Image 1 (cartoon, helix red, strand yellow):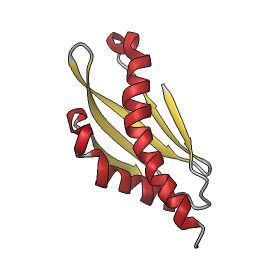
Image 2 (tube, helix red, strand yellow):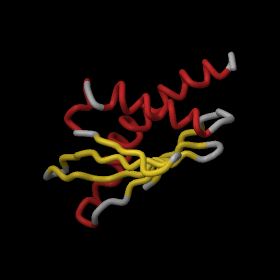
Image 3 (tube, helix red, strand yellow):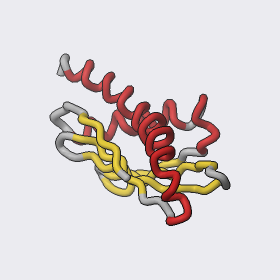
Length: 116
C-alpha cells in the first residue's frame, strides 16, 4: 500500500528537514497519540515509521517514508490478517494521519522556498 505526496521542492535534503519537523512537532501528540507513532531515519532520505492500529486487535505496523526528487512516498506492507482492513488503514491512518501532517509541513516548506 502506497501514498504519495508531491513536495515541489528542488532540494530533497530540505524535504527531509520538513518531514522531520512534521514527525517531531505534531505526530507524537495531540489527536494522534493513540497511534503511538515513532520514527527513525534509516538513511539521508528514508525513514521507518512505526504506529499502532486497532482492527480488531491492536497491532504495531511499520511504514517506510522515502523522499525522491519529486515526491514523498509512504509505503506500508500489511500482515495477511490485516489485508481485509487495507482500505481503512490506508485512508485513515496512512493518508489522513501521516500523509496529512507531512503535507501540512510541506506546504510551509513551499511557502518558505519562495524566498530562497
